[in-house]
Length: 238
Image 1 (cartoon, rainbow, N blue to C red):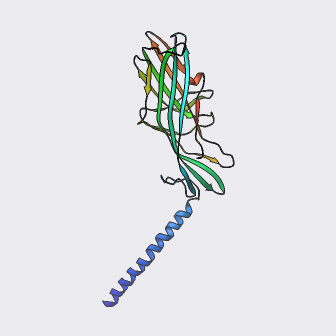
Image 2 (cartoon, one colour):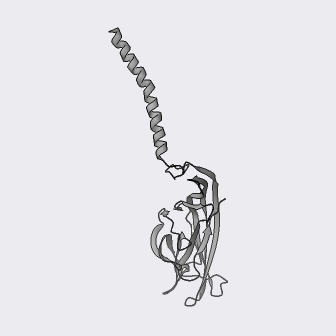
């Protein structure tokens, strides 16, 4: 009986010593299976060889002006807000590059001001529909886009690029001369962007405004996507 007790004790001690060793070996194999420098799903650090440069924000203020001869008025679109992001410096397989993550379009405001055809002095319209549209600025840059309601992702025309995926939001208003579309609680975001240090390129996003204006039973429309074009908002490595 005593010998049997000692055998049970020794077996327990062996298991106590071997189990941590097996867990340690398993963790080494798991780590070795993940290539160094490849982005992971970790929310705080996107890759094993990332060095965080910092959290930054770029503000923008873009303006478009349109004169409607049928309505004898001038409308001024003003888009402003900021894009916040986290910048990383990465070494992966002896390749050095920058990585932009958490790119978030914050409080993208759009204002429409109605003026007389001379673009001076206020004028009233019966109603308006206004919208703002976002995607990569260049035709070759098609970022992944994530939006919050009431924004939507659609495929529609972009200046000189044909149809492209873009985030857009349109709103309608009644009689007035100044209209504000605020989006303080509805951010949109773009997917990660990386650029090698040797051939450095900033991520540049584009925005354009559109609108329909009514005066009584007459309307006129404007889209920056078909005339003066989109405006660029470029991030940086700082």
